[in-house]
Image 1: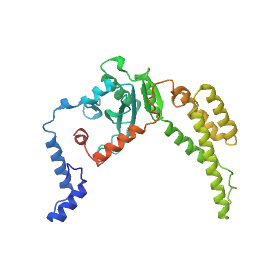
Image 2: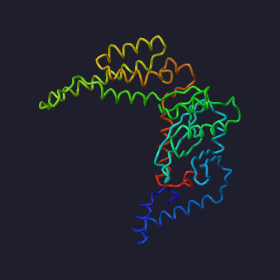
Image 3: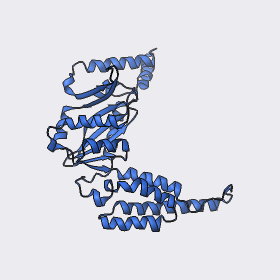
Image 4: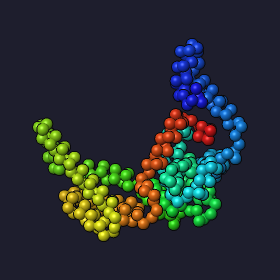
Length: 308
């Protein structure tokens, strides 16, 4: 049942129902661990390429980076486009999983490598990216485009380690942040201080107006992001700030100071100057996260499960 990825609790239930066993859940976990180790006895370390980094006393593992040789061959064959993102709840050590996914010439995806950093800090990401660059057989194979979320802790290491790569930011997550801030900052009318809304119909009407306003602002924002030229971007951004969002200076300030300074990383006018293969989001690596977690079935496994 372990080979079929059955959960320990289901294995225990099956044992109690069919064999009237007095087995405890801890014994099921121990039996699964022994079975997995037995499955790995015939495997050698050469089946994986991995790098580790320990603390200064060499007593604690701080970072682990690994990839399959077939994945490394794929990386050197299709290095043009990479997508990177972190996910959580994959191991008993509570270390985040940093996953790197590539795209082939026919838009098929493949896993490049994985890393378990002890912390999500610039130093950890710099080390992981240096290990990634070390997998390339030639500097000519350096990736042209990398897509990530708008994470400053990851953006800076990419700029330092792979400076010639065009860094694309996921426009979907940027829009999600803009919409969330819009819902908070852009109201149809402010409620009087201390007043209670008594009229249910009036409250529903206000909510409907607010929803329409948010929809209007998000539509205008998409026009900004999808501007095909720098001239059209200037027109759409001015329209967005003055005509659509003029009554909401706090929201406009957020967009101008936090989001638009990164326009070259997500607006079409600049992004279309690079070969991004139509991938403008981190959806493909998030799909890989989901597929991996379906395989793991547990957030409390050790590294043997990941490498098994």
